[in-house]
Amino acid sequence: NFCDVVGIFCLFSVAAALDFKYHHTEELEAYLKGVHAAYPSLTHLHSIGRSVEGRDLWVLVLGRFPTHHKIGIPEFKYVANMHGDETVGREILLHLIDFLVTSYRRDPVITRLLNNTRIHIMPTMNPDGFEATKVPDCYYTRGRYNKNGEDLNRNFPDAFENNNASIQPETQAVMNWIKNETFVLSANLHGGALVASYTFDNVTGSLKGYSRSPDDDVFIHLAKTYSFNHASMYKGMGCDSRQTFPEGITNGYSWYQLEGGMQDYNYVWGQCFEITLELSCCKYPLADQLEKFWRDNKAALIEYIKQVHLGVKGQVTDRNGNPIPNAIVEAKGRPHVCPYRTNEHGEYFLLLLPGTYVINATVPGFKSMLKTVEIPDNTGNFSALKQDFSFSEVSIRSRAASCPKTPLYQDLERASAATKPTLHILVLMTVMLVIFK
Ligand SMILES: [Zn+2]
Image (cartoon, rainbow, N blue to C red; front, side, top):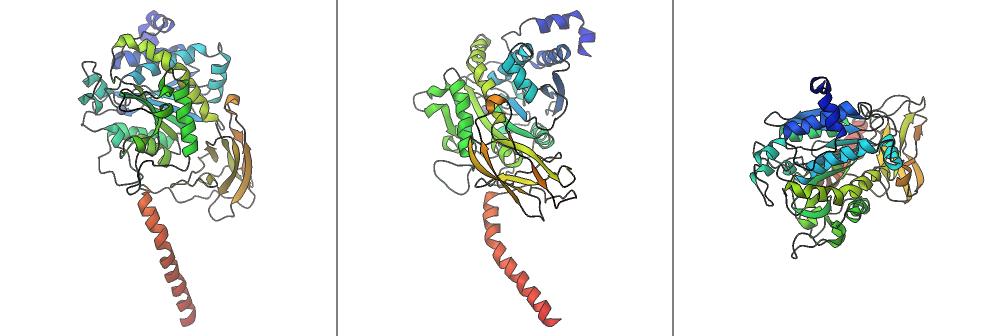
């Protein structure tokens, strides 16, 4: 145990305010271990893997039940510093941790937030790139990449084209993490611009201008929640006069196309709505500006987490009340290329803006159940609307086919066009078998 070794210093360092300075690997680890030692029942510290150079990829989990998922409590995550030379996110997440733990049971809003949300914070996804950046620099440096020279935000499977980049250890660790947790909402912290960017980053074919997801309205709301609670992002001034962002938000593809990005991956494969936050015009500003960056982002970081309670959530169960995993639950008119499914507890979470929706629950092999729900504006209640589904005919755990590894949008369109001839051949063969019997 860290505190046993460090003794009284540990108590002192946690009790003292967190400095506004850059925390390198050892200091970052010491800080996270110190917080966990000081707040053992409110936090859980674990490493989800290692970087190419063997540094731990630390995640601090905060909440009333930090060690494991509780039914009905949504999972939220912040990931920073995936580009090693974009450093503001790395430090402000440490200050966010400090603010959350010191406000619990003191500030009623933060207390309710932590009682009803499990918050995962990963201050750095690319610790090697951060350590490789020796001198603070506002512009691009080699520290952007991991030790193998790969851009981690081009390294994920892509929903629109085959990504031939070899998956890096840091990327694989995050992919496993996303698979193991039921993340509902997330943000990915960068630098080099001042804007909240949302999915999609890539596109089918040569669409001009905007790559719209079926949940575009929700993404615009999420991005605006951040930009309007930020000290200046909403003004949309960008970083120079040539590039402005109305209301401080942009569709990722509208800004520039990229392949293998983390936000599209989260949305398509992780059932998690992620946006990309560009927090500073200067990628690696001097440490004396960190306090201002924290002040500018504090309210936005908190308001954004609350959005995990948008929409509707519930459980799908069989006639004995047992949870049905892998049931498909989607809102009508919002089909996901890889349909959103219940987790091992039969739970689903759908982020939706206030309004009337038809929710369709499907257990493969059985008749779908439709329920009309009226979703209120309830993020202030720290709980999405609850709507369970009980399948009276189902009494066994049924398993749907798993999501394809590469649900390419183009292939999907081709496949649906090819289904009809295949069916015709099947019908023809059946008819022939009957005739020749
Ligand atoms: Zn970046």
